[in-house]
Image 1: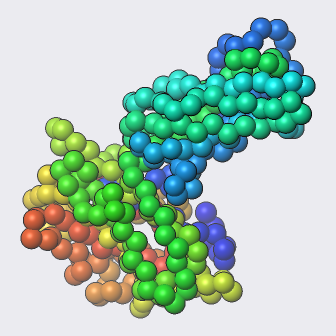
Image 2 (image 1 turned 120 degrees about the vertical axis):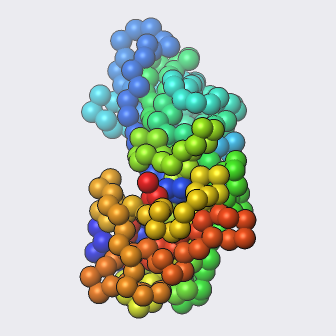
Length: 313
């Protein structure tokens, strides 16, 4: 993600803290219809129906857009109607819903709506023809979040985004996060809580594991001017239940930060003062504002003024 783009949304990821975007891959399997295939099925998009989050959210409907393409990768109008079936190839949960869709004669796309029962990363879905024109099967690999929420921001309008499904950490859902945007944001804001597997090692106990909290938000106004500065940054608060983070002060639970959004995590430096970034910092851990509440849960405050990903180790 380019930090110089005026319109691209900022993405934060913090453990205890997805967005993590879904990765499309081929799924090799036997075609449901015999004969030589003259094209294939391709999954072109997977999104949570409620928020538009890439991938899916546990227990909520998500859409899978499937397209027929020829050998050159161009959309292929089918010569007769075909039925496409969605299936789970691997993953921790169960796929349910009306797991088929029809591409009408002369068309090339269909949308299937399904639900997945568990959250986790690397869930592999397959699509195949059950009747009609002979096409090779395809598929995709997605991440399924535990919960997600969408909000709308306006430049200059103070905004706090908290997921009602994860407002505070609990022993069952031990990590939650929320955004504090005193200067607002530009357009859609997404906050989700997912799994760490395959992204970063999480704090664990014998029965539970911290999650990955992801936020996507545009911190520039309509003209591309930044809404936040070193002395007036935005903040991302990561809450960790005492069952995982019950002993020790803020310094015992440092935040790891990826300033490239490509997986190169490093420890976030401490802020030089409460509520302020250093002149050479784009992100810092505000140890003064970080605290424990009356229940003993830890709330770490991360200040930032551009694209980051961050996690407790």
